[in-house]
Image 1 (cartoon, rainbow, N blue to C red):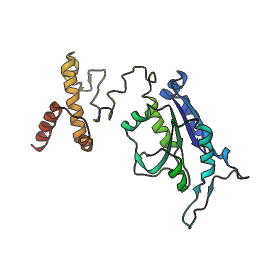
Image 2 (tube, rainbow, N blue to C red):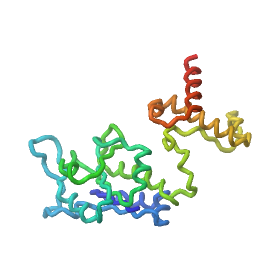
Image 3 (cartoon, helix red, strand yellow):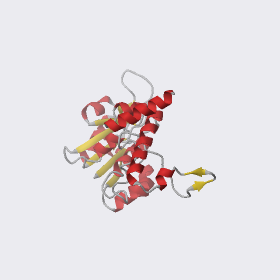
Image 4 (tube, rainbow, N blue to C red):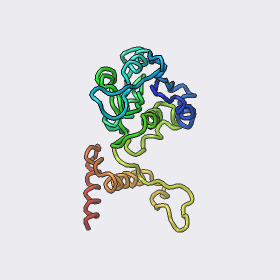
Length: 244
């Protein structure tokens, strides 16, 4: 996979590219990452990339030409996916990360100032994505979050291929509780089922705990999760216990 980030602050990404799972995936050549300063594509003698909005209003807008030219230079074919990071975009989810992990080339556009010239949104990008209902100073932080979520799904990025399969949201549910040594820490004990060695029963316990945690903390996820008949029976019992 190739990932390019169009930004006014490429230096922000230096440590990010070399650290943890991102650094591992890069060293294994699972992903090639590049931060591109789109100010370099400005034809203005002062290298300006922003201007006042027509019709008046607060702040400055990113002008279209530097960003259009940067994308034209970087996107070599129609397979490139151009992602605009903005508060108005589709909410980024684990499912979207899994979708993007199947692409060959991603281009993230990091905004600043008051926003973008609308022609960037209408005629250049393929996706608009947002981390949530809040506003950041720039798109760099959001780009890092999304890239991290995507890259860890690439083959070889994690030391174990199945490491991400039980993560929260991967199955549509929140992850079950997990424990490690010691078995008894200051009187707080690990659930006995996890010490039993009975893998089938442990799997059932984990599924029930996952359903319970999702019901308690993110019941909205249950509306779209793929649930079996057994899951529905467990949920019915859990809801009944909550009402008691």
